[in-house]
Image (cartoon, rainbow, N blue to C red; front, side, top):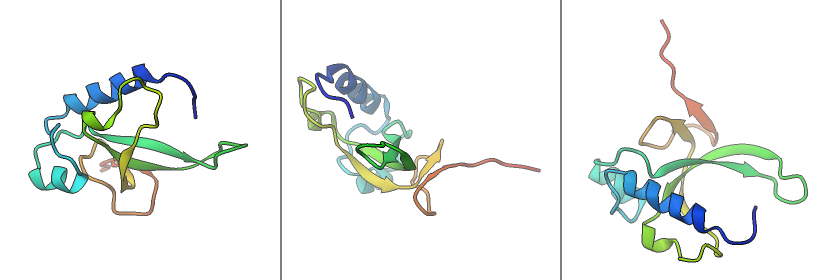
Length: 107
């Protein structure tokens, strides 16, 4: 929801993709089937109601695309593949309804 030059955001997205141990899979399905990623390409994104309130109504997990998909200059929109509910610390999407989840072990 910001205008203008987003070059530093682009640089951060590319850096995060390159931090993943699988930075060559083009899709999330390929990423899961290869099974070598460390999860750095999975990000949680707040979902909002848009203008005028921008009220957060939920959270979802997205898979960052290949660096070549993020155009230089930082003035275009950045896309990612929607994969479902987000589970903190996981390399997989959640199985429940859309939202953000944290797994906690209790005794």
